[in-house]
Length: 121
Image (tube, rainbow, N blue to C red; front, side, top):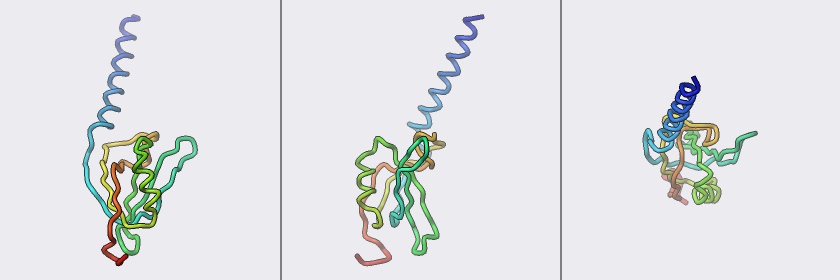
């Protein structure tokens, strides 16, 4: 009886670990988006994550919401610096996310300052 319980528990733990590894290492899609960085904040009550938004239209009609993992300190520093500017972000989209990673399935891996196509700066 004990052996069956340990085998069942071990199997469930292994399946859960494989699921987490799959979510972390297998992206659903990769890409880039550009727009005005209108929001970037460290938010949450119990679990705090970095969340942001990019406006992809003149009137803010299309908003791209994203998260940044805590380990990407250089990306976080650049996003803080580029607040209010036109940026191009490189992201990966995951099948799902956990609360400790962020609120969205889109995770920024790189950010660059760009010239706005709407205004000459």
